[in-house]
Length: 154
Ligand code: ADP
Ligand code: MG
Image 1 (cartoon, protein in one colour):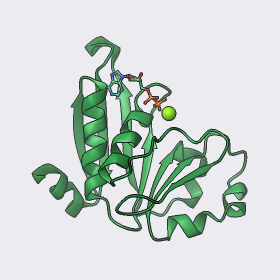
Image 2 (spheres, helix red, strand yellow):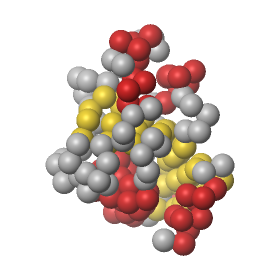
Image 3 (cartoon, protein in one colour):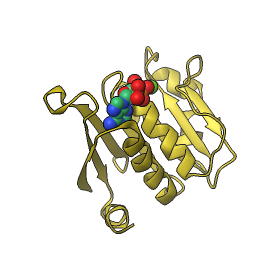
């Protein structure tokens, strides 16, 4: 794994970073998205979906743990496990079909299901720094070395 660091100064830049990663995403990859409320996880996800060629609007799945988008280059399985009480619930929804399936997973609040995450999972960590401005975000991308090189040279 390799760690890349990005600074964004507005939502558009975060969206575009998501879009770039979506364009480069491959089948079977799992992207864990960490960051406090309001940091830009949804903005990033919308860009990521766009990068996969998904045109329908993407929001946080409110009533379901996982939302499936089939219209892009690869299926996107968007998880928001915030409301999960017990990782056992992940078995009930058949998470393995998504994690080890035909598409790409993007998981919000991954720490709640830490024990289920494969060690190959990638991490995106978004952080504010109010001293640097209201719209400033530091985005850390922990990702396979090959993909890190693709991102940098793309
Ligand atoms: P989360 O899903 O993490 O709770 P959202 O993506 O829903 O957060 O909201 C992020 C909010 O922060 C949006 O209102 C967006 O306009 C704002 N924002 C300001 N600067 C940025 C930035 N650099 N990157 C992403 N969002 C930003
Ligand atoms: Mg959100």
